[in-house]
Image 1: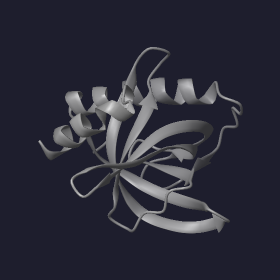
Image 2 (image 1 turned 90 degrees about the vertical axis):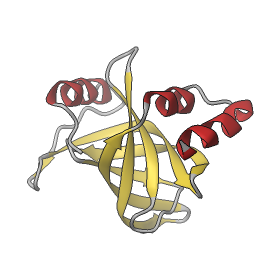
Image 3 (image 1 turned 45 degrees about the horizontal axis):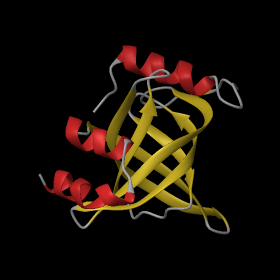
Image 4 (image 1 turned 90 degrees about the horizontal axis):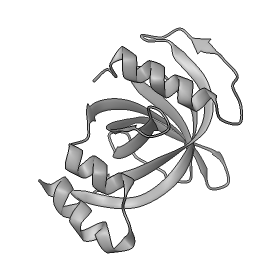
Length: 143
C-alpha cells in the first residue's frame, strides 16, 4: 500500500511540528523523511489487538515507517499505526514488520511496511479505545 500524496504531505507537516523538525532523506524505493514524533501503535496478535503503546517515529516514507519501541515483533508481525494528518484527522494503517533489532535495554528498532488502511470501524475503535472497549476491538479485527 502507498499513502496517497495529500495524506502523506499532511502527515509530514504535522509530524515535523513536533519537538524536532530535522529534515533528512535516504534514497530507497521511496524517500524517507526524518521525523521525531510519538505515534500510537497496537500489536495485531491472535486475530485481535494485543499490546498498545506509544512509539517514537524516527523516519517515514509513503510506504513505511521506522520506529523506536518497547514492543518486539517478528518479521511479518502486524501492528496498527495511527498517523496524524492534521490537528483533527488521523490515518490508521496496518503495517507489517520487516525487521526488528534491539538498540538498548528494552528498546527495539522496528522497520515496518504499510500494507493497507485499517477499516473505518477498526480505526475509530483504535483511536478511541478504552479498557472497556478491548473486546469490541477484538471483534472488529476478527471481522
